[in-house]
Length: 349
Ligand SMILES: Cc1cc2nc3c(=O)[nH]c(=O)nc-3n(C[C@H](O)[C@H](O)[C@H](O)COP(=O)(O)O)c2cc1C
Image (cartoon, rainbow, N blue to C red):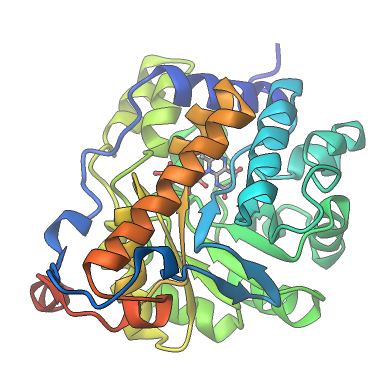
C-alpha cells in the first residue's frame, strides 16, 4: 500500500467528508459584524435592480462564483457538469478543482471539461501554487488552461492544509519569483487564492508585486481544510495535529479589507463561509468584485442540476432584494453604500 493516497482517492475523500461531516471553522466570517442601512424609501423598482457586471472581458448576470472544487473521479465529473450547466443557465462564473490529477493522468481530463455544457461561462482553471516547487512551470499552467478552455488560471495557496496532512507538499519557499514568471508568461490572467484561511496584508502585497490579476481571499468562517484533513488522518498523531487548527485563519471580511489596504486597485474575489446573497452583497459593499461559495454549491450539486439552479436563483434574488432595500440599484452603487459596523471593522485590522 502506498503511504500517500492517490490523488483520485483524495478527491473522493474530499467530497464525501465535505458532504457528510461537520468541517466548519470555529471562526466566523466577520460579515455578521456589518449591517446595511435599511431604506424605507429606496426610490428603486425591484424589477430593475441590475446585478450584471463584466470581468476579464466576459459578461456575468450576477457577481456569483462557484468556487473551485473538484474533478478527477466519475462522481466529480457529474458534479462539475451539474455546476457548469447551472452556471451557464444563470450566467455566473465557475472554477474547477485542482487539475493536477488530470495533468498526471490525462485520461481524467474529461472530468474537468465542462465547455460542452457551458460554452459561455467565465471559467477558471486551478492548480496548487506549491507544485511550482515540485516540477511544474508555465507549460503545466498552460496545459491546465487549455485542457478546459479556461479564461483565467487560479493558483491556490494551501500551506496549512499541506502541513497537517500525511506527506503533504510543504516546500513553499522561493515561490514568489515563480509566480511572477507565470504571471508574465501565461496568456490568461492569474488569480491567487487561499482555500479557507484568508489573506493578510503582507501576502496581498506580495501577490500584487508578483503581478496577479485578482486575489480570492477564501477567508476563515466556512469550510476548514484542517478539519477535512482531520477526518482523513491515517493515524492519531496526524488527527491531533490537524484538529489543532480548527480556529485558525483570517476571517473573510477582514481578509477583504487587508487586500484593499495593501493593494487598493486589486480585483478581489470574496469567499470562505458565504452562505447566501446577503453575504455576497456585504462582500461587494466591502470592495469585492465577486462572491464565491463552495460548500453550499457542492451540497446542491450532489442532488441535481435543478437543485444548483434553484440555489443560484435564490442567491441572486437575495442579492437583488438586499440591494433594493439598501437603496443600491447596481453594483457600483452597492460599493458606495454606508455599512453599519464598517468603521469598527476597519479599526480592527
Ligand atoms: C469538496 C471541495 C474541494 C475543494 N477543492 C479545491 C481545489 O481543488 N482547489 C481550490 O483552490 N480550492 C478548493 N476548495 C476550496 C474552495 O474553493 C473554497 O476556497 C473553500 O472551500 C472555502 O469556501 P466555502 O467556505 O464556501 O466552502 C475545495 C472545497 C470543497 C468544498
